[in-house]
Length: 249
Ligand code: PGA
Image (tube, rainbow, N blue to C red; front, side, top):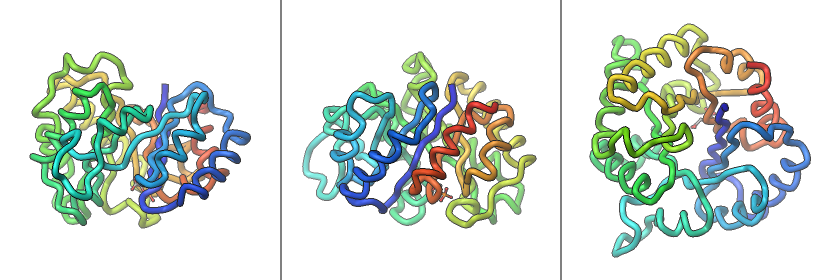
């Protein structure tokens, strides 16, 4: 099974989300893989209503490491679960870079989300400077070790229980997609690191300027278990085509 996840970031109002799903339900041909939507917080309820009774899943782009309390401005994973969500993104590079989220906080989030029976989708990836300094796998290893340090492999029994998204920061929203060789090499190394940590079953998604044009090629690479898609997931046709790439692999 492959995973195709749409990260809508701060786009799409509830009405726009509804319109998207009306069209996507008609267009989507992929009923076998895991197709997941991450709308912004205000559009979660519209998403939940539109996905009811379908095989499509949804989750939040960010939740806090506690279910309730005096945490002004945060989102509750407990509430997320109560509305039928299954996933939560953790540590997207925009959260790390723009909102200063630390590995310590991310580890707490992974642990809390897991304890609720939701699936954390932990995002990792190097900056351009780190890649140029041949630090890619060191950075990814540290982010994995730190992000997963408060959970145990035994807490994850199915491939849908923990998902890793490898997103090179320099490829996010830039139109610059990592080359086949870069994806192949880094995914293989990440798989090795995960194996060493005991999290062998976690699927590894690639993210960063995924488009219908490059999806078919990338999905065939070993250890590429799907995609986390930003810009190209906002359009029904282009995201549907990306989801169809799973059937060629
Ligand atoms: P992009 O974003 O597909 O627009 O590069 C990916 C992401 O940020 O998850």
